[in-house]
Amino acid sequence: MSYSTRAEVREMIKDDALNAIIGDTFIEEPAKREELVAPIIDAAIADADGEIDGYLAKRYAVPLAPVPKVINKFSKDIAVYNLFSRIGIDEGTDQKTYLNRYNAAVKFLTLVAEGKVSLGADADGDPASAAAIGFTVQSNPRLFSRGQMRGM
Image (cartoon, rainbow, N blue to C red):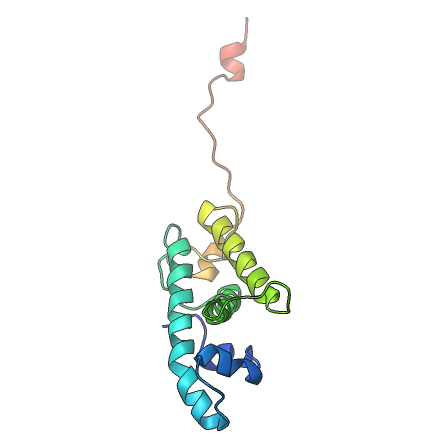
């Protein structure tokens, strides 16, 4: 199960960028372009999902089901970055946006792996049980009590 779909990733890519991603000469026929780019998009999604799972495996059972919305978003962002990194990202153009989104995704996933951010799901991936737990505090056992301190 993927965290994003081919249609979602394809929607984020402009039509004029497809020929560059495919790497061939200009293909005028839209159906032929879509046919050639489909396996490339699928591979980019698989790579993105593998990268996400690498970060999340420390704290969550992967793959996540159901997929949290934030993971879907970052899967799309990383997949698009993977596609454009095949041809090289020009930081002087609007392609820098793809790099910025990728860096934001990696930063978020790093925070999740460190336990500083939660996906709202427990280790089994169930967001409802994580929300039901609420606020908890854990501390060391008490060393001194009023009874022990009396008369000192």
